[in-house]
Length: 200
Ligand code: GRF
Image 1 (spheres, rainbow, N blue to C red):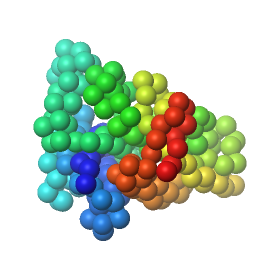
Image 2: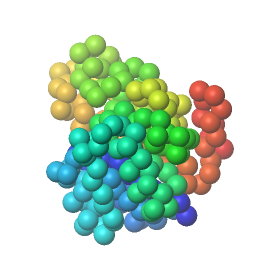
Image 3: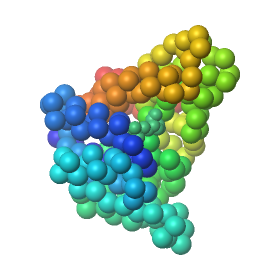
Image 4: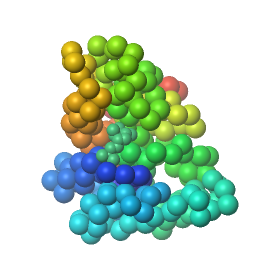
């Protein structure tokens, strides 16, 4: 059984989906630690309700990004974390975390990458006039939402959609697809071959 560390910045609904799928036995893993860069993140409350250890590291309290990420890596290692899941973690991951968890850090993004990367995936899809958007779970590399894609799910953009409505429909799919991707990782069924992820 693998240990998961989840990095959040806010609401934590994906964290909740991960916790629920683990508790239902759908994913053979343990959520060993939840880390937030914001002390007010509601996801921290969710973790506490499930007796999951939490930690808060605020970047402003560190002299640089490397020191900040070193502290994160230390906490992940102390909790024997095998897989790092970014779930609404609103920071670009740097080389310290990536060096420690290369091929072992994944992210969920509310658009069909490589379309609409960055923090406003749904809004961008809507503003662009896309007819289909969706969700992507991918391995994290040094870019912004650029790593090898594990799973994707399309979500149609409907006539008259607002950002809130589209985001809500995308979020429903996020909550299904993220646990599925974690399950594949936990079962050792993902192999990265260059830009491609082979599902065994
Ligand atoms: C999700 O839409 C996720 O795809 C994006 O940030 C949002 C986080 O939502 N990266 P939550 O905190 O998991 O509720």
